[in-house]
Amino acid sequence: MRWLVTGAGGMLGTDLVARLREAGHEVRAARRADLDVTEPAAVAAAVRDVDVVANCAAWTAVDDAESEEAAAFTLNATAPQLLARAARSSGARLVQVSTDYVFDGAATVPYEEDSALAPRSAYGRTKAAGEWAVRAETDDHLIVRTAWLYGAHGGCFPKTMARLAGERDALSVVADQIGQPTWTADLADLIVRLTEAGAPAGTYHGTSSGQVSWHGFTGEIVAGLGKDPAMVGETTSDAFPRPAVRPAFSVLGHDALERVGVAPIGDWAERWRAAAPAVIG
Image 1 (cartoon, helix red, strand yellow):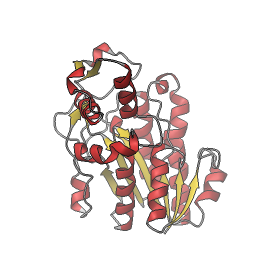
Image 2 (tube, one colour):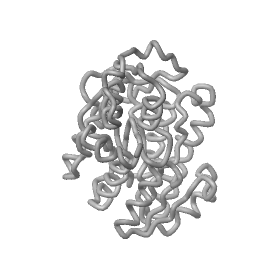
Image 3 (cartoon, one colour):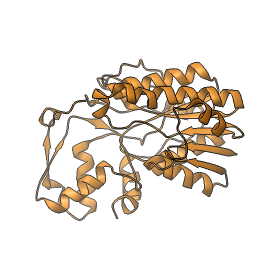
Image 4 (cartoon, helix red, strand yellow):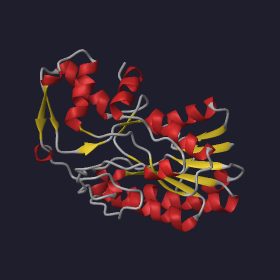
């Protein structure tokens, strides 16, 4: 298959391009400097003659989106709309990467793929709008929601915690936010497997299995560095006020994947241990 990957210079885009080439696909890797995904004519030209468009381009500065929502909307909603419209015209399938932030974070059981959207931040609103735009513009789409991403090709939580663990004797990490740490290489693999399987159009969740707090995840990170997890103390979100509300519960269910016979990503702890050498060395 011939693929166009937007946001190809980012943490996920880099891994997706590598995974596709490994699988023998023809890939057009579009970085920010290569393609303005908010410019209709440029998008239409880029999408021509490809079979699949994977949109990894996004505004991901969650806090900045609170004061720059219009700019975030342009990248997170308008761009997917243009890509979806162009994909429909050219007969390509669109893979749109979305986020747990489209939910309110108030659940106590995993969010299902058809759970009601109720974003509580500007970032979440713009990503939810992007989902609606894709659904409105093309029937041939895969919306893949993910959360708590980390990877080798960009800044991420494990890299920050590993650095701080090397600089300090103790760390204080929030224990009241629960989610599923997910390796970008695993998400890239899932996107490829979903597409190669010809999965029905719809919404899927691309996160690791299981769940953990940021505090618990940090304990695993420092243990892997040979340090005592007891150095990681618990705190609450109130101790770290931020402009954007963080979901307290970001656990996503994987029923849709199982219904179409595509295996979800494995347990977050096992996947972290596999990822750690590439992510933090």
